[in-house]
Length: 425
Ligand SMILES: [Zn+2]
Ligand SMILES: [Zn+2]
Image (cartoon, rainbow, N blue to C red; front, side):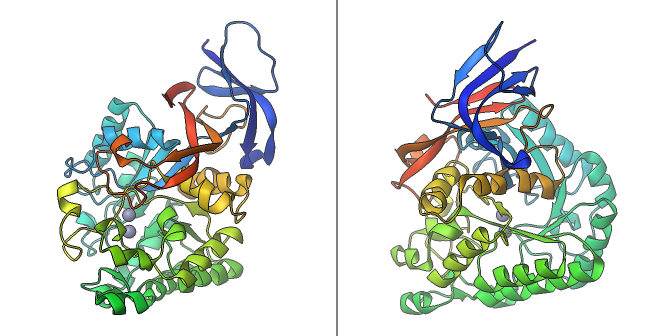
């Protein structure tokens, strides 16, 4: 029996309302006991001064394989996830081919097993080919292992398709994840529409483009009883729409990315394409609204929307460059530096939004250190200060807006199924 004792760490596990110094024993890939003393044949990890929590989960990652291996592969993306402290990720279906058949789901699971870094859960297409016309074979995809459905990269545009997606997914108790955006309002846009876009003379993407479709999706979820997850929420209006819908008992959840609670549209003054993403960086009032939404529980999850793009693509002019930034290796540091240190969130609430909540939404048996659970564990140094250097990323791409930032907090040891998969050197 392979056993591992993680000693003297501050164990924070929101699934058990636990936050105290404890020893955690792992045997044969599972959490075996708490508060045991060392003895026998054990590998010991000293976690004094560290936080020991369930392995972090990122429910919004673009791995790019199959089809765009110049940006990222399942190998490099899952290695980047580990370095960021994540033991499980959910990958998005806007690959080439798209994830709309059992064959592609099998391929991804096979590549993830070969890479042998972190767990990969598959989000499959809502529509065949992500074309927004015909519903994908939801039942078959669930059977193949898909945990949720989305056409991310694009919105699920047709309200009729969205309604049927809710109804179908409900039969399997799966959530529908939407990139809610009215495209007629954002066409040719490169940044948030506001004073800054006006001054810079850049075409804008109004907050209303998100507000309108998020409200539509909430209405359809309410009408069908379906489960709606609003991806990368970025506006004050949609945070408020989710807040009000939750009060009415609508089955809606949402996530925010680190860049949306950290940066504003002012960053575009640099004309640097590493500030170009969709949804775009918003104005200060929207950033404050998402932080308030995190604090009051409206926003359930912190997810990265890790969107790698090879350098030559991002080096184009701002209007030509693709949307998106990498996020796996900076998320935890940004969360600590921008949410925990300033007092917006405490550790337990933060960890819940990066473990238990995404696990519940995806219906996966992760995000807990309860006895018997898979020993997926992240050990965090909460005080270490470090500088973001994209040259050190495990990701194949370096399109980060946080280059050179000084952050506090980082994953030091990452354990998947009882095996130490990552150790910061
Ligand atoms: Zn999206
Ligand atoms: Zn995305």
